[in-house]
Image (cartoon, rainbow, N blue to C red; front, side, top):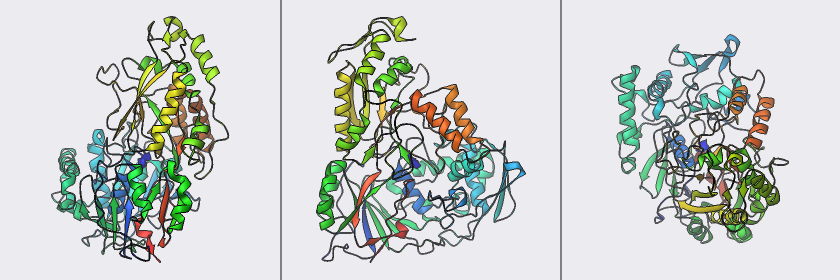
Length: 580
């Protein structure tokens, strides 16, 4: 989901292990070729740079941005206005006027890979597509971009002006709205100019979407040959290896230093780590269960570095589940369940200190150990008392049931048991152990968890409509590398607002909506509004907060330069990499 990245995101492992075709070791341990690098990476399955529901995994964002540059890139080091990374952005920082409602954007000089100038027509093309296909765009939220743009005009090939419906917090709008814009090659994808009208935009979008859903043709379809990024797609194997080649006509300042990058998928942590230990990959990761082998890897010529994320991790609750939704709507039950998750111990023991407790929706600064304290600490005795005072007969290591429906809460029936299915991810040993621990703690108070691991927990736990009898998932976890990676401004309009696009559990609270809105319309930098929003949701528990792991503990050959600093918003800039 990540920027989902969305945050993402949501993170899955590829379905198969394929043979390595590049980046194998040589005598100097630098790789068989000094102009290539092999990277442990889940096979991306979405190439169109307009996010689609079910395809918001972090690897897809990295894959598309390698080929299609966004209008704005960002960095969190505090060095630039609105967190804009000027070196990687296609446009200058917007000029704000009209009391904060009008933004004037000027493009820099850049070209598409075929030599055609990149102009405001390409930004306009993107705007036309998303405006006409909002229901198919994963980043859309009613009232948000582009609904909040009352006027959009192209002045010339370099300048466009947009006016918003109201004056927003400029930092929020630049970081969380303009970050979605990716100029698209209008001359190659809309040769007849159909997208200028809504019906035509729908037809063009349908064509692009159909092509994006056909991964086996990614490296042969002419559509994907025209791009603006530092990399082009040289080879794509569905559920297998992907090879990116340096784009020789790239006009950006951050030109690739390597000739190729091979993205190699693995079936799980063990498979990846065995290959890493054998020295058969240039860049990989160390699973939490294997962090103790850091010294061994360093002795083999690897550098080991944690990749801290601008992220949070949580266990999603399905408030619209016909059976369990009424239970999740009871604040006391959410509190009791949160008190049975021993975040500090799980972070230390199971995640080997590569995770820290999540205490609320706003993450601490990347690289810090987390908030000073969570609203709900691990406290089984307090959890038991909460259940008993609300009409439940607690049966340790048995089945706790509601004895007094009037006390248990609206929609809860007498005799109803606290039995839930957790849909989680395959391929992560630490995640499996974490849920075994949580299941054990829950069982001590008669709460039964059935842990079901699947390759893609996001895909099988979609947002439900009220009273949808077919939407029967209870709890969903997709946070083995962080559940959600934020854009530069860590507000919650996409996560926890009513009907938000990534609000899979359908949480809704008017006060939460009010506080989220306040962050968007703050007159200053929005810091105090973010604090108020965080403090409320930390206590209201729209989800159950879980240990937030580093995105990964990266391991890369000591001769591979430019890997660090690793971007906390989960971007990967392969063009910065080079061999000594």
